[in-house]
Amino acid sequence: MKSLLTFTILFLSLSLYSQIKTLEPKLENIAWIAGTWHGEAFGGQTEEIWSEPSGGSMMATFKLINDGKVTFYEIEVIREVENTLILQLKHFGADLKGWETKDETVDFPLKEITENKVIFEGMSFEKVSKNEMNVYVDIEEKGEIETVKFNYKKKVNQVKKINQLITVNKAKVIPVIDGKADDEIWSNKFWLPLDQLWLGNSYTNQDFSGRYKLSWSEDALYLLAEIKDDVLVDNNADPLVNWWDDDCLEIFIDEDNSGGEHQYNHNAFAYHIALDGNVVDMSPDKKGKLYNSHIESKRITTGNTSVWEVKISLYSDSYKDDEVNSPLKLQPGKVMGFALAYCDNDKSKTRENFIGSVYVKGDDKNRGWIDANIFGTLKLIN
Image 1 (spheres, one colour):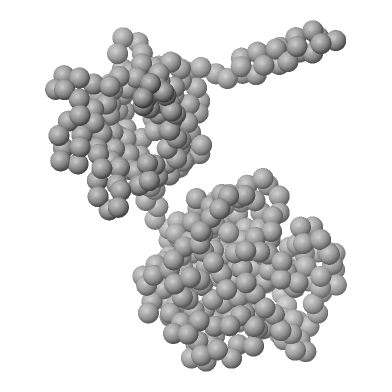
Image 2: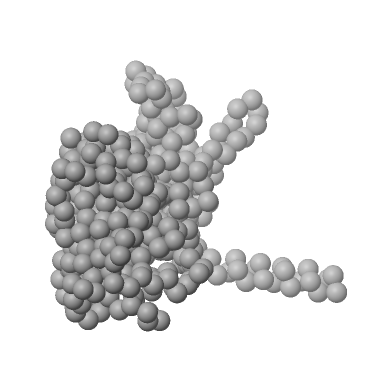
């Protein structure tokens, strides 16, 4: 039995290995490395800029910055040589004096290329996504070899069409999130409408009406929403079951206003705030996840009018679930993608209406949970 189990494991391992396609040693198969990459290593910030393949080579510059000063530089090339590739580099100090001799280079012969990896002897590149990669470098010190991981994010210059530009004033006094809306920041702000039908049939003002205000501090974006809804419904006690079919306030945030797809990633967030205060969004695992630490909210309902006061901490698209992530500090001049919406259910199994703050072209207007391009744009000012 033990022998059979060992054979089965070996067979499965070989089968899996055979499915990994090895690519030819050509620059065109590693062109995804090209771009401007930023990361952290050795207690500082790293920058690595790779050119597109041309003239039988790719070229890169690297620098490490510690405490605001350059520690060292590198010049790197990957060259096509005799039907294979070789990576070569030279180091330079902050004063641009070389570490190696004039004719000396540090060489890394190619071992293998797959769809998502380029493996040289002593250095490898791993494609995590279109805009993220890991670089692993073997560093020898005192006779021992340590593999150092560099996690890089690509700088992408995207131009998103400005849709509904709103300027947001800074709060002089940070509000108390209590749903009372009696803080100074709300007294001199004008109301913005929540009146765009994204999903469902036409509704009356007796059924629903909504409006909102915005402000910000260094630590967060603040939202005050006033929702008039004649019936409040919370069918699902479990916050991760069909949360979009209960009455809830939904806040869309694209921290860098880059737009693009965000269905199962954190390029943008779509926070559903339930009547009980739980906050849900789709996770990269393709299922709902609680993000209660991102949102602090309080709702007070009087008659058919609910006042929601919300503090929203902002995170970049490098956010990783189940890791320690720090919210961003906000500054004047920052722009971000934003939209507000309300899921309205009047005692049905599913919501009847979905009302948003931004006009969306076309017949399919319920795209905010997938497409950050439909968001409006906020600009923070003093």
